[in-house]
Structure formats: structure tokens, C-alpha cells
Length: 145
Image (cartoon, rainbow, N blue to C red):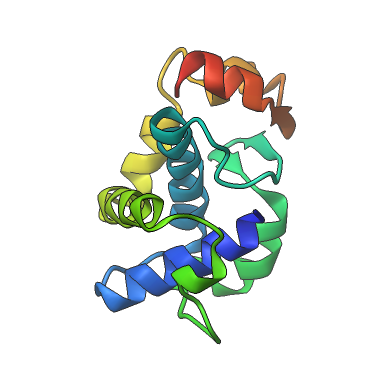
């Protein structure tokens, strides 16, 4: 699955639940969704690479897609919805719960959470030495955060 499909779904769920989501918040939400979805299902939510940027984990294609919004809320456009995601009904319910959990947090709190010591972002970023380095999925799976 592609991160763009998951991002559109996240934006749609947020819009339907009156939750504002900026590009920064979307990036961190996608990161934590990937982790929790994997821990629960042992499946990758998407295959796009995640990188360690100064404000936390980033999927560059998603950043470029929504950077024009700046810190403003992203609005859905087109046919977003679970029918675009090749996941089961049970996995959709899990994803919806996780989206509401993370998207309800502030962008600041999500950044702080991603920066926790021992996280895959912190292990990769290493106080800037690993700026814009890929965060390997193997490391995310190993650390579970």
C-alpha cells in the first residue's frame, strides 16, 4: 500500500470527525499509525520510506503533497475512504481508532512523542548527525517506537 492512500484516508477521517490535521501532524500521525498497525497486525501499513528530519519522522512524498498548506488544516479532495485501502474490515476499525487517537493529539505532542529517547527517530537522527537519513523499518519494528 502507498502512504498517499493512507494519508488521504487519514485526512478524510479527520475531516469527518472535525479534527484539524496539518502537514506536520499528518507526518507524525502516519508514523505512529505505521508502528501501531504493525504491532497489532504484523503487516506494514505502507511501504514508503520514512526519514529522520529535525521535527521528527517524515515521508517526503507526503510532505511535498501537502506542504502548500503550511500549518493550516488539510482538507480532503476527491474520493478518500476505506474502499481505497486494501485492508480488512477489522483492520479498518483498528486504523480508524488509531487515527482518532493520534490525530486528536497536538502536533507539538506528536513531535515530542517521536523525539522520545530510544525511539527509532532519535536513534537515527542522533542530534542531527542522521538528519534526513532513512529510518529503517527493521529498526522501527525492533524498537516498537
